[in-house]
Image (cartoon, rainbow, N blue to C red; front, side):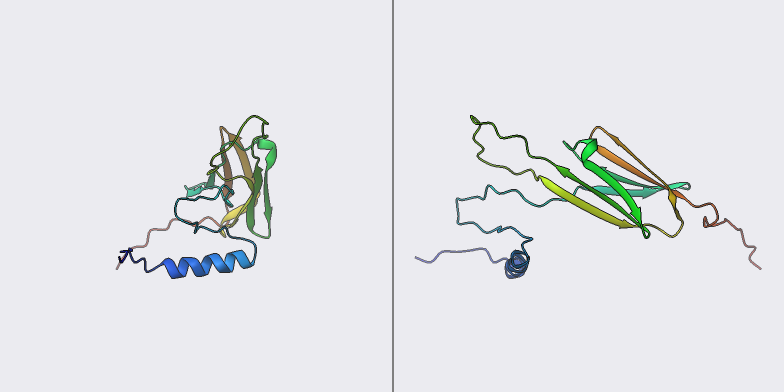
Length: 151
């Protein structure tokens, strides 16, 4: 009897990407035999939102269950870097894990600073699992509003 399978045109590309990432020790095998799932944890990078207003840029990073002491923000050569670690809970002898889907371990996110951001006026606040990195806009580089008369 023939089995009907759904054709996924991206499957070959995903498998090739997995092979390349595994070669460099970066990926994890997403393909498991049917009915089996891996218990290993995935690499992760926190989600961020980046916004701006007239006075500053704001990078808002979600860091649930990350301690403030485990987060470091640096500015170097026009790049803002957020690095840290979300630690796996200490294993208890009587606890048996069946699945671990949340990601743990070290993370690193880097963002190029806009030209009008002042690298000496960067602040960071951490509250309730959210990191707010504020990049003030430089006064001299801030565009001036000019109204031009149309002739």
